Image 1: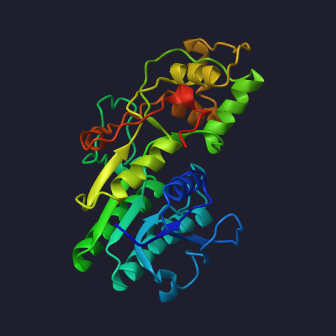
Image 2: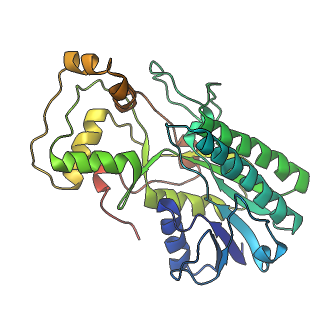
Length: 307
């Protein structure tokens, strides 16, 4: 696959690593940005949520990697729900349709494991790409709707769409809830929870970037969905211990016994956080692994980079 790649979301946590990997491999890119940024060369400033997608965006472009979207947030206000619809679904479809109408045949969409639905706490089996709980939060629903419509457009335009569903993504400069957890562990007040041997799937941001390029440039893969994880299952205890190892921390962490955890879970402000820490989110990346892709890092490499 030759020609220029149109990359969205390049200024985000994942996008920065994808952009760096493409640069290191000497691929030509045009980057769509919501705000001007001198860190990128060939750029086009556009608010995908509001602005018209003009034909000039696609000049010289032969493929699209679409990362831009509105991130998952458990506190869903009406404005956030509207952003899920506008940016994750409508803007993604508008971008793909415009690209296909200009004759571009390759479109890679970065979705989320939440597009498979919300897992129940007693769900202990490994989940694959065909699974759907049928229960979606607004974020997962917006991603799933985009997936289905993109696959439909692919058939209508005889194009090639591939979808990657990352699990919780870690790495240097990670943000969000994982950053809050890291900061709390560093400060010595994040507790060690009882080992419930729950299972969570995660992936290093550099391995995710590698997987995106692995799928995008494999022209034999068409209209497929891939879950991306590092291949391990982490309990909450292992996540805590791995973070301490990654940062070489020897500080004290208080231990919360099971009875106290159950008591705290009745407090409304703490219930969601405790449940999120102790629930199961086991996803299988076997489909990707069978194609020859293998992750290089695990959570103890959180602070390291591959490239």
